[in-house]
Image 1 (tube, rainbow, N blue to C red):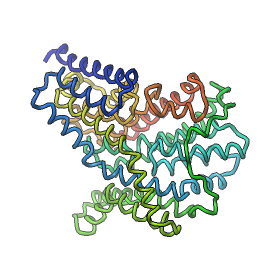
Image 2 (cartoon, rainbow, N blue to C red):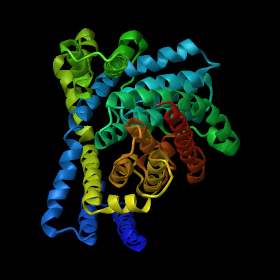
Image 3 (cartoon, helix red, strand yellow):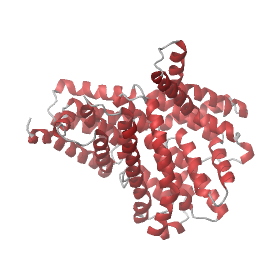
Image 4 (spheres, rainbow, N blue to C red):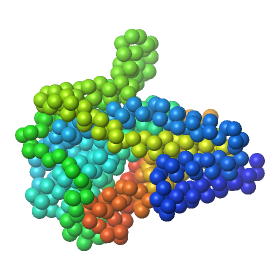
Length: 455
């Protein structure tokens, strides 16, 4: 195929992205419906046989949701149980008291990181905002001074650490070991948060000093339970419950690594450990533990605990459909030959697949807004590029996640949440939130490329 022939499918994708933006931003059509409509249009424009289009769409939806619906469901329930019992508030307030007023921003970073592992980004933001308001009021500091480190931690955990949507879905698409994604994700996430969190706050203060005088609006958070500290579970049990799935997955991954290093053959013990370390199993066990630690042990009626669980599932229903819609679009790109066209263009390129995945995800993030949809679409484009390559699949997942975080702006819900919570102008939001996300994306890419030298 000529270079022009390879460019045609990419032009179709670009037009599809423009139509998607038009449907979502101008016509205010639901993101899930928009993704499926555009998938149909792109499939037709790419010349896919009419009798194969619906099959491709079904395969995209089923293949994406088949292995993650349970993970998302259990993850949402776990986060809700920890939140509704006051465990998340206990984690935040204890760390803040331990670190003291002088190191308050580091306390916020650590608390947000721990809570961010267990909760989805939006849920973590809504949960932590009232706590941040209380602390800022007590210490007479700017709400944004604490808000930026909080947002940095939540964003990094959202981008790199399973069971969050992006890394979980992309690990499944790339057929990467989710335990390795978690392990490498922690290695990259921790220094990224340490650099970006408190240090970026100082830069932002110089760029937009007026933003640090704003008081924001806690009313926009909606109803959030506020507990007296003595009403909440203990700090240790709260942290253990929130991090339990991560602990189980990490143990299974480390044991598998040791098994490979020492060349130990499989046996029933290793099989049991790997079963427990599977994300679905780890989260199911963690949910059952949370039902006890955050419910029965707190003398909360089982009916009330299950009501929290049901509410959490309702809240992620549309998100699951949107992720499925992203999977539909991705499958159409693969079946329509777009991935092959990209592979042909870059077949003689010396660009690292890790860097290429980051670049494509970054462009799609800026165009589409949703980090998860951008990451999923990237998978459809770069999977053909990885064939015959010895690139580390876990690092491919993380580089795609890093690219999908860049430059959050007006087409991303997170942009508007940050703006409204902290009462910022558009310029102030661009100078804080958008710049923060961009720096996270670039710094984490640097760490991923550095890690790729050793693994």
